[in-house]
Length: 400
Image (cartoon, rainbow, N blue to C red):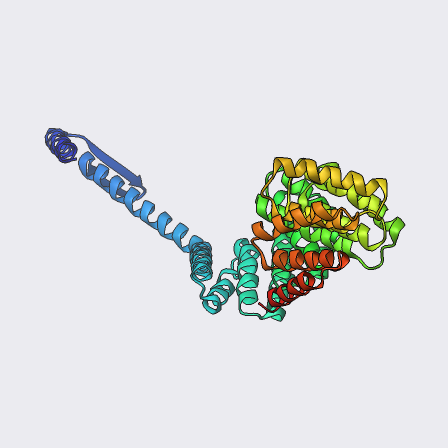
């Protein structure tokens, strides 16, 4: 930089020397005639006048142009100032929202909304801030500000759905979801919000559909997906409005992959047992146990016992004996096998398996049931002392 400045100074000095030398040896004059007047000027002085006249005219024109452009420059300055203030308000609103200072966020959003380009985003921030302060009326006012802005339609509907779901207004949230779907928007977050809204509305068939769809996109945690399926199937199968025919129709609509899951099979078997469909309940339990062993399904299998003396009951006993060979320390299975043998009046087998269940039991419920079955067994064998002892132990287990 210093080198360039030095070169400029050298050039200016050289030019000044050149002009001075040229002017000194310049004998030329300029004569101006305007009858009857005559003006004689040296050429050097005339050139100097021309330069001064050019500078004067240049300054005059610049001053005139600056004066005429002053209103536009003032308007431009005000616009820039408004943009700075609006953008600063938007930054302040976002910062306050993330910091949890929702009152300040809403005030800053008001400043940001004065700039038309920021009005949409500022309205969304203001709506979220008002929602956090439980000011639902102000929240709706903010959202209504951008109701006619097509460019912000998706953002407005997504925000409205999320806030309504958070406020447990399921019907209003589903209305926003329907409007969102009509506009062709079906991205993952919209489906997740729709799932929450249907869950709050207890619309379990739609919950199941959305859970399956989100599972395909791996957009749900496996534990959450399993719990939502469990809640949905529990509601669908536990409805008191079902009769024997309708519960079978509901079961037929459940995918094969879900039928063998323990919580679904257990709930279905219970519902079938309650309606006298014990054969179907046993089949459900056997298929589920073949895929996934679970004590809940074993209990449901015990409750689905066939009538005494039937071939179905003998088949149940054979199934349980085969399973017990694979799981010799399973107390629930031993209790089930003992109960089935008791019903079939196989006294020796029943006592052996019930005593095994009692010794391997890890839950008070199983201890209580084992004592009760043993008491019934000894009562049937006319052994009142042993029966009374087991009844007493069952009562103590119940109290504890």
